[in-house]
Length: 401
Image (cartoon, rainbow, N blue to C red):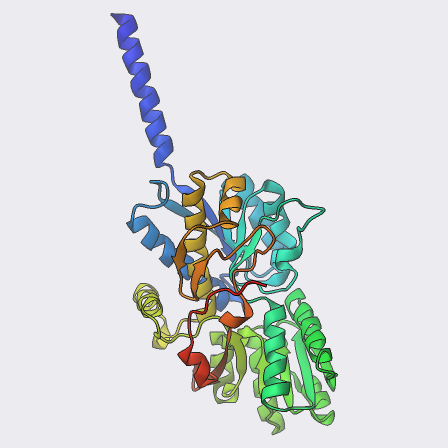
């Protein structure tokens, strides 16, 4: 009798442990700058991810388990990014991650996910090299994915807007001194060279610089008809405000970061007319976008209803749905299986930026292609479509090379 009772207790204990295991949440790392000059991007991305997770969990989660986000502030600092990535892997034991806002942080830290065979989806970082760090033949498999428009796409669009659409013959480049700014500057120079154009001035500035007079004077004296930019919000605002102080106004055409709230707010009227490539503009022009914008505003109540960085929020939201779909398809939380599922996703995933159908392959980890990106323009505190034709054509699907 005692043996039977012990057997029953053993079975019950095992059943209980298996049940507890099955109910354990799926831990996903989400890292970005939640403080400092890059925080509009980081906070918006994180909030977009959280919004997606709340929706997924409300529908039962993934594999019958809830998703648990483990958040870390990397402060847009490369070494801090390395530290929090190692902590997410070794201490928190996340099965996958989303995030990385700053290209420099991504390039410094994502190698630890690669070594651990843990998939990471870069949902804001745009440096062209980000998804190319770990390619064959040196690496059989790449664990780095992306849901943002890389700088090869953006630099080509910036140059086409300046040279082809607006017929400028003389342009200057102002880029910050970070990896993001300098890699973007290189991409701009390549795109200009493809059109046999050499910038009349190439100037650098540092994070937290508040006086761009020297850089702007060199550009003005060289006859620049437009300023092409690669930087983040606060410093970009100093460029716009610096032109006002000099009494010299030429168009600013730059990377997507000209849509950041801290550029728009700090530049005020001086920011009007700034142009940038965008994967998402905060207009409810599809049912999914209308639903997303309303849900974000309800959850976070941003001032004036404007998402601090709409692009970051939308790409963060979509990255989480792609990752959840991959985990569901993989049937478990093994990193290798999740990567394989991401590379061969079945069915369509309804996102804010687009509807994703087979967004990745083994050799292509870029979800966004050129045809999905439009030009935005700052107007009176908001970003609008720069070209009416773009507003009419939304949710373009991926084009294969």
